[in-house]
Length: 220
Image (cartoon, rainbow, N blue to C red; front, top):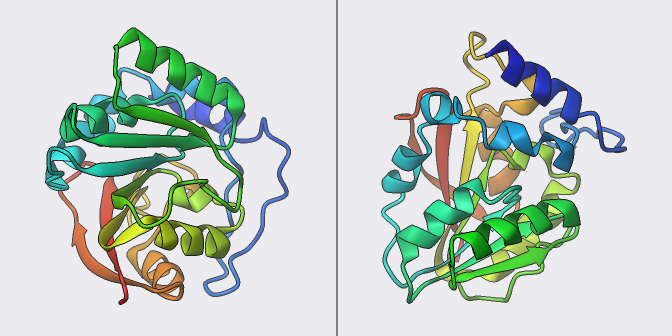
């Protein structure tokens, strides 16, 4: 556990990014985790700490769906999404760091996953096709978005009218969770920030050990 926290602390400062403050909530925007911290994303302890399979199951993703793993990092969740949508579905896996996309691409090739499209994104644009996504997933990513308002607007364009935006974030309401405060999100802050960009908080799932599952829909 202490090793995992130390890796996260070091790698979150490895990229040169001046932390900002969200204009609506005053939340301090966290520094993006460097590709040098990919080991933390793939740590064995993640199963017990986050229960990623339970998170995927809670979303009830349909076979054949088109989804995106935004801020996909090393592809840990991408592989799980690829399994959920099946061979007739499609997963767009985006990250702002080419080094992460290289690592993800190697993982996809090793797994012979033909339904994954890696995308090198920008800090304010996920570079996703417009109006085709059934679901966009961000796992421990939203709190690091350098331009959250612009990104949310672009993500909305990528969603189908019936599409869902899902944030999985460490619970800020629980001080016992051993993650730095700027790497947590409260339900209240997430609701205020995301709804301001044309979404509605449809449900909050609290079945994971340490994280909220926050499901947003588009406002028509």
